[in-house]
Image (cartoon, rainbow, N blue to C red; front, side, top):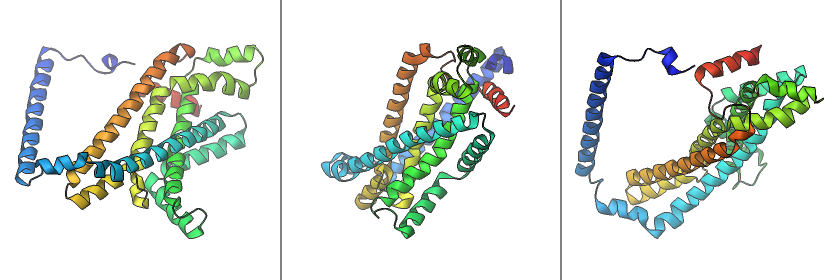
Length: 291
């Protein structure tokens, strides 16, 4: 359902009021930005040496690049394991075997409800006391495991929603050629659902990338942690955080562009529309899932 159906199109007076509000809002934002710059200038934050030190070999070779490498390692491992977790438990929620469906539902709902940071700290402390892993790898294991369990549960729901969003003819066609329910799910519906839900999956990958910054709570030396370390040692914390934020923005932009490219290339291979479902469509899918 489009926004035009949900809301009345504004008339001439409404459009004029919207323009006035937008202009006032823009003036307020510009004014705040000017005040911030003036304050930065008064406190010396705009001095050239505070910024130029961020582009030295010491900053990049000893802090930013090692931090970026650790961030990418944690994010890549978490994305792979989250996809595996999401597919397994997403299919588990769709199976006709009731005990497996119930267990999958409990697991998914539990890990969706627990905050990532709490799981991360719990795994870090637990593995540290149990001495299950090498002490140097415990922070990485805690970060990857926590991100996998939470985001894998979200991906399981995306898989389930994607399968419900497919046209009914897909399952009927599979049944017509003799496929069982499980075989239809694995070979016909799941591949199309993953393609159709690709934009939503990429949004979740971006969340994984950003949430890897929580690893600093468990002494994992990711990008944000290393940026703060460099900034605190050189008296330019603000500049270090801005550079780290720009790197995160660049990574997320590259990930989104890659997903758009892949979605366009694969859109002809699924019967479902390749875009994130609207809120009303999502609600309809959830109602079907509960039926």
